Length: 277
Image (cartoon, rainbow, N blue to C red; front, side, top):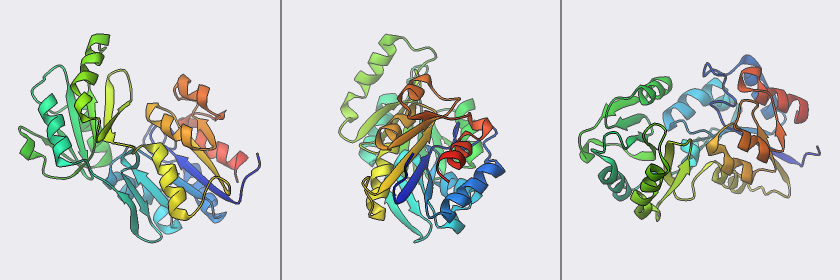
């Protein structure tokens, strides 16, 4: 493929650039350095929280020393390590948080909710999955009893329906949350997991934000995206070439320009080394 003057590579982390061990391989870290050595950008775009993305994963990749960029919470926060400043920093309003709390609190068996901040998970009751990800990202974890217990800003919210939800349960979910559509978008992760995100903010919006910030456009820049799951569809729609992981969703592979090896086979590094560097 013919590359333009500038190259931006946007990559999901879990299931994509990260192995199933939640670690970056040495090959991936070496690849990222080679990308920046060519004056290209490798930009993580992840659902992981602010603390983990910028103080941990970006550091493991050496982006602080390479003067790189990264995006957390599927796009609410974008950071420039070179200039040491936020390109974007957004939070859900207190009014919208209260609406979500009022809709879901006390609905045991119907809704599990994770309110995710820069460095904390708020939950209604301790859950195996939420505690697992909190531990992985090394965030605080707090079980709340009332709305006032949410005492830090929130970037995005995860709502989990009952196991194997019926069509009626899904329809009730959309009906319950129909009133929040002015500020929040509903993004489907799986049949039972949904994200409530600030309207217009997703992995695809990161591509537009970064191009604008760097003073680039698609006429002089080749954009690539890597991903494996539901929250990568928006990224796929905004880049010139989307590369689905071998371990990814079949629906995503069908929309991809290319399919690479799995995350446990260094699929991201393998494609970049063979086709971009």
